[in-house]
Length: 55
Image (cartoon, rainbow, N blue to C red):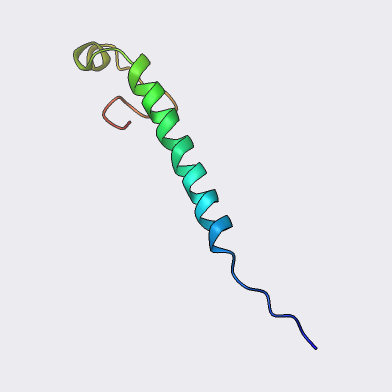
């Protein structure tokens, strides 16, 4: 007899939520520490090859 593997939705959704949370956390921290928009444009500010508008 073969045992059929069931897709584990709980693991899939939990992993996705953790990844989304980490992306939002990192982008929020970058936006918080970035200079104001005008200063960022004048100084050509970027982090991880993205400008303030990119974040």
